[in-house]
Each structure stands twice: as structure tokens, then as C-alpha cells.
Image (cartoon, rainbow, N blue to C red; front, side, top):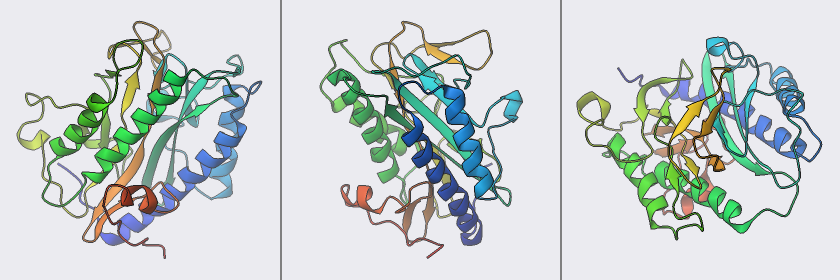
Length: 281
């Protein structure tokens, strides 16, 4: 069953989303050569405490940290530690979440550490981020979940191929419902698979529907494997990857990007989409 939220509940999710946005701003500034991924986790912990929020990552299924720090070929769920030192030329995806009064926010971004990144890495991140926005723009009344998947995949497939020959849309991980829990139904594929998106797996989008939309794209294979720590997910061919995510609510007045300071207004305007007013004013 999909959890449909009231306007008051969406307002609480917006509060949690703004905490996530603050974590992103602080960790982006701290993701410099010489920093460890544990340093970034400590930055996130401080932001959460300052806002009187709780972490929805720490302890989730036994996860030992406040954020996920996924460097280079790590796709998602990288565990922060004091041994992973960021180097000039690395890319890192930082996934963060927060809880306010039992309501969740969740978002991720890819950052460039230092300088001198290959153009194909810059383009990889751009393509991944823009595919996310294409998916967010498809969150509208009358659409179904598969329309969001189709928008994400279609954007990626339309882009010029990288020198590696293709973009790999990660198969085993995707977006999800969000609200009173961090991960809820429905599961959102980042590509169209009609066999897996039938009936209740392809619900109609109605006001109160909330999704975490998060494409993960590599410069090679779409296939992944999990390391011995039971968390860290890497590409099977070692190709580098990008991960972008925002939490989105559909309201009577359109979509609302809960984890963006401006509710996604500027970016969605590029798609001809008007965002709902900020419930916090």
C-alpha cells in the first residue's frame, strides 16, 4: 500500500528535507582533497544535531554511520571511515537523510573533489542529475509510476554516448516511496520494465504521493556487487558512477521538491513545470 500524506504531513517532510539540504551544503564544502569520509560524516552529524533532527541512516539495518559516502566506482552505501582519504580528481556521491517528528527526508548528490576531472566524468554527473529532474518533472496528476521511470531512462538514452561506449543505468537499486519511513512502497525503477511494473507496482500518482527519485548511472555496466561489509555497492567492471536524489511530494498544486531550498522552482521551470508553494512559507 502506498502511504498518501496530508498537507500537514508534507509540511513536516519539508522540515526534514531542509535539514537534508543543510547537510548537503555543509558536506559539499568539506569534500576537499585530504579529508576523510569519516570527516564528512562528522560534519553531517553536527548539522543534524544543530537542527534538532534525527538521523534515519544511523542504525538503519545496522548501518554504522550518518551518511553514505560512495567514492568513484562505489555506486551507493559506502561506509564513512578514517582510511578513505579524498584525492584530487575523485568523485563522491553523498547520500543523507533526516527525521523530524517521525517524518523523513532523503537526498543525494555527486561532488567533484579538487580539480582536473575528465570531461566524461563531468558529463556523467550532469546526465545523472538531469535524468533525475526529468523524472521529477513527470510527477504530476494523471501520470503513473512508470511515467517517471520512462522519463529518467529516456533522458539518459538521448544523450551522446561516452567514450566508454554507454551509460549503465544501475539495475538492482532505484527510488522509493518515503514518508513515515525512509524506504516504503513503491519501488521506482530508473528504467522501464513492463514485466515488473504491473498492477500495484505501477500506481497512479495522486496528491499526497511522495517519492525519493534517485537515478544511479555508471560509465560502464549496469551490474553491481556488494562487498564483504554487506553494504558497499560497486560496479562489477570498476567503472565510476554518479548518484543523484531528491525527495518529492505531489500536491494539489503540483510537485514540491522537499529537499531543495527553493522547492525545485528554478530547475523545474526549465521543464515548464510550476512547483507548489512552500508549505513553510
